[in-house]
Length: 240
Image (tube, rainbow, N blue to C red; front, side, top):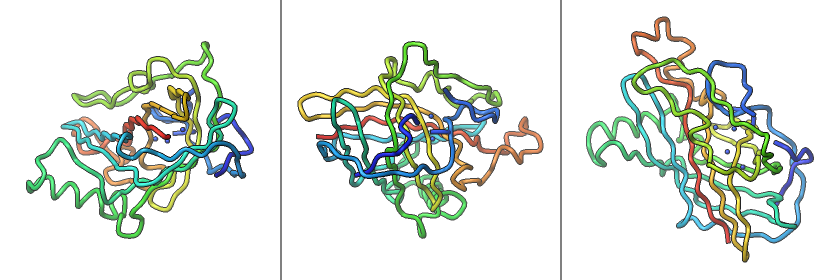
């Protein structure tokens, strides 16, 4: 397992302080960080007790579902997370707001798997590799930023964040062949050989090349002819 040489940044700078400069409520996102070997107790991700929920937005509606985690593990030592990796199955992505088997469900699934979005034919999995964990201070604030207002404005970072974060988790998130380091608040408990972590945050999908309907190119957002760049992710994971 691995650990960054720069602890301080769990899916840092945009999918996580939030200071990306763009008028969106997304996590801090930056270049991939170097990692090094970490030592400690290795705990296997319990895929049947872990969920990764996603939600996308457009002015005229929302779509949501889950992305299954297929493998993963965390390394813990001295009562804190020292490293870890999780692999996600993009081809197993579910859509929960449309009836399975319906024409609209099939169209949306196919579109999300296409080169317009995840390009799953070439990149069927995504990975998150932890590069650091640091305490969440009582003075730390999860900032919410301005979004274009509509009937389906994306959820704010502050509303997605767990009520009592304990850590800032950072790591390299790889999707569609692109790796970015993200940082987000999480509520982590470690007891009796079990780690439970909950987190909720927003990412800017375009940072990973998922640029279809990019709102930045919308000539007139009032026409609702765009998809918000902001995607919400909510994690509830257990390793044992």
